[in-house]
Amino acid sequence: MSAPQRPLGGVAAGLALVLLAVLVGVVAERGADAAPAPTVAVAATGHTTTVQVTAKGMRFHPDRITVPAGDRLVIELTNTDNRRHDLVLATGPRTAAVAGGATVTLDAGVIGGEVAAWCSLPGHKQAGMTLTITTAAASHDHEAAVDGAFDPMAEPAAGFAARDAAAPVAPTGRVHRLELRVREVVGDVAPGVNQTLWTFNGTVPGPVLRGRVGDTFEITLRNDGGVDHGVDFHAGALSPDGPMRPIEPGESLVYRFTATKAGIWMYHCSTMPMLYHIGNGMYGAVIIDPPELAPVDREYVLVQSELYLGAHGATGDLAKMRAERPDAVVFNGYVAQYAHRPLAARAGDRVRVWVLDAGPSRDSAFHIVGTQFDTVYREGRYELRPDDPGGAQVLDLAPAAGGFVEAVFPAAGRYPFVSHAMVDAERGARGVFEVR
Image (cartoon, rainbow, N blue to C red; front, side, top):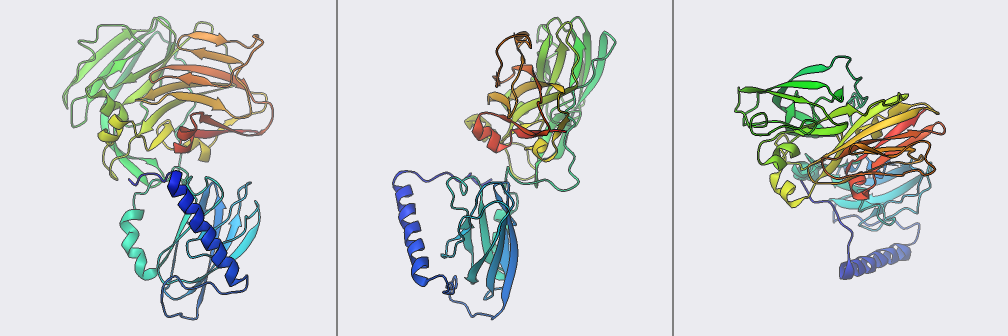
């Protein structure tokens, strides 16, 4: 995967500003009516290609334009964001800042080769607002670079279905039996990006379990994978020597524990290196309800974790995991899935959100934009109740920690939620509550 672009610093930043000033000066000297110069020496075809480009979600759509060599390119830029954007070509042509809802036309000149373009407003290029113009002959040279490129702002296909985030209902029985099968599956983790995931029952995270204090869980672990795996349930207290041992492909074991403490607990593969097994998807959550847990209108479960992408279709990159260089941070296994498929609520609903930080290495700072938490429960105890005079804005969790928050949405609207470690929100730890 290519490294993310970073803002220029120091001397490089100064040089960039000087070059930009020179480009602006050249454009000004040509005059508003002057035709842009061709990108390279090329015979003009006399034909004009017109392309519609949309600025949306801090991206240009499309972000790659291919035209016949020698054609003049005209770009009709429509900004559908609620903030200003512009479009600057490395060859000089540029638009003014375009307000939300407006459309402008840019004459890009005769295209003879690849031309880079971007939004020049502060931070927008670095956030991914780039566009590439190329010719039909040159486009094949870049197919390998484009294939597998990771964009945390990309939109999934129309048929994409997000993981159901609704919390399971607590079962009525006191003994809960479940079979967990280790499966290696190839699955999407972002639009156009798939990986070979090590899973419990074929999903990342694995299934959410739920019960009450005093309930007994009997888990049969079967290893249908290609290497040894195990499991560790934080919701139980017992010697790890037997039930947490690694088992070889084709083997099974029974893991039995009694839940004596409330909370949302992590379970994960217990085989070394655990960093690699958790980083490849082997984790899940067990909810043990606090006694007399009050009913709410809506209840969701969000498990935060990191993605350390390997090659397309391969397992995660252990070197990135050890260097703590995540490509993405996600809720429930997929980049920004609830930004594209929002979670539902109604105005006046009391909503409870259980949050578990599965890591393996990044903290979580769960926050909902536009509302405040009147209930905070973290690591087995209440820190805030509705009758308290104060409120809370974040549920901060270390790896393997968990809890829940409650809030009442005051009015209809779209309420984003994020990990307030902003670099992680931009990496994919974000979503939306759509309140009707």
